[in-house]
Length: 306
Image (cartoon, rainbow, N blue to C red; front, side, top):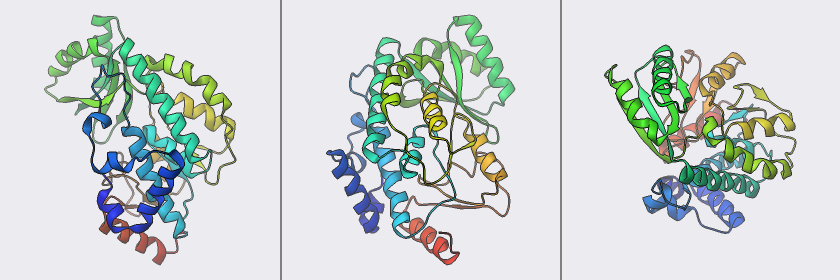
C-alpha cells in the first residue's frame, strides 16, 4: 500500500515522513509490511484498527505532494473516514489533530463493537427499493437495527450496518434475489445509529477542537453539499460517524457546481467514475501508481490547473 509511490516519487515519501514525525510513530511500516492483524484486527480484539490512519496518511502525503508542485483544488471531499484527510488538507485542523480524532473514533467504535458486535455488509446488484424491502423484512424478523450506510445507484452497491446477530437473517433475505454479499474486514457498523454511543463519547473532544478558517470549500459526507462555515463543518464531521454517507450525492453536487477535473487520492478511480454518470467532458485523474501520478501531475501543470 503506497510502497511503489514512496519508492519512485520522492516528494510523497518526504510528505509521509513529515506526517510520521508529527505523529511520533511510523505508519509506513504498516503500509509496506503489515501485519494484516494490525490493519484488520479480529472483531473481538481490544486493539482498534490502524487501517484508517494508514489510509489517511497516504492520501494526505499524495495530496500534499501535489500542493508542493503548486497544484491546488477548487474544493475537496473525502468518502467515509477519508473525509478527515480532506479536512486536514483544507486546514480545518492540523495533521496531529486529524489523527487524534481518527484514533478516538477507532477506539470508541471498537469499544462499541466489543459491547455489541456489529459489521458493515456490502450487497451487490439490488436497487434502492429492493434494499429498502430487504431491510424492512430483516427488521420485522429481528426487531433490531439494519441501516443503509452507503448506497450507489449506478453500480447497485449498498453497504448496510447492523449488529452481527442480524447477518444470518439478512443473508436469507438477500438469497431470494440470488445476489451476493460480503462482510467488510473493517470492524464496526460505521455511518449508522448503532454507533450513537461512539458519537456521544467523542462529543466533548470534538467540541474542544477549534476548527480553522478553511483554505478550500469541503463537500461533506453528511450533507453532500459544499460547506465553508467552521461550525457547520464540525457538526457535519461528527454526524458523519452515525449518519449515512451521501457520496453519490456529493459527486453529483460537485458536477452540478461545474467541477470537471477530479484527482483521486486512492487506488484506481473507485471514488468517482463508477458511482454515478460522469459527463463526457469530465476527467478523472489517478494517483495510485507512480506512472499514474506522473501523468496526473503532467496533465495538471500543462493545463494550468493550479
